[in-house]
Every structure is written in structure tokens, then in C-alpha cells.
Length: 93
Image 1 (tube, rainbow, N blue to C red):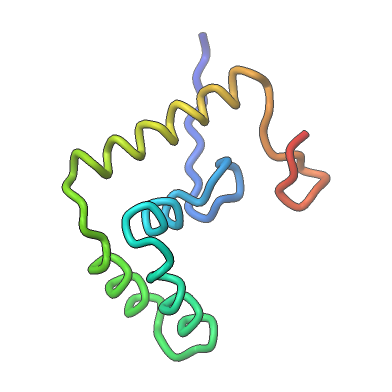
Image 2 (image 1 turned 135 degrees about the vertical axis):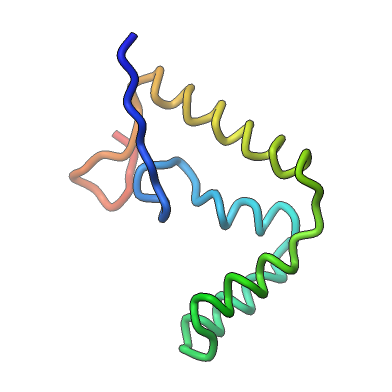
């Protein structure tokens, strides 16, 4: 089977924004206030990322288990032939 490596930093091709997923899973909605401050220009991207990362209270195994589930979900999506439809705003075909 031929393989293709797709890198996605902003949720363009993945079924979920992994950064937001990690933050939501391990901080609840506490990270959203920092995101809103960043959107208003009150924080730089680096400040936002540093402060949000500091909120995550999880060991490496817990984060990896969550990421493994995202990976499994993406593989299922690809195997089913799904994925973002280029003709829509991130919609599924």
C-alpha cells in the first residue's frame, strides 16, 4: 500500500484540531479565556501557547493515549474515503 504523509497544524485536513482537543480534554474550558484574550490582541501567540500549555495537567502517557485515539479516528476516516471536501468550508464529503 502506498502511503502519504499529511501534516496539519491548523485543522485544515484533520477531523479535529488536536491542540484544542488536548486543551479541552485536560483543562475543560479554562483555556478559552486565553484564546479570547489572544483574539483581542491582548496576548502574543507565544504567550497564549505558553500559558495554555501550563494549564495542561497530564502525564505523557495520558496525552499519548488521547493522541492515539485521534490517530485511530483519522485512519478510519481515510479508510472510509472521507475527508474534507475542498468545495466546502471544512465540510465532509
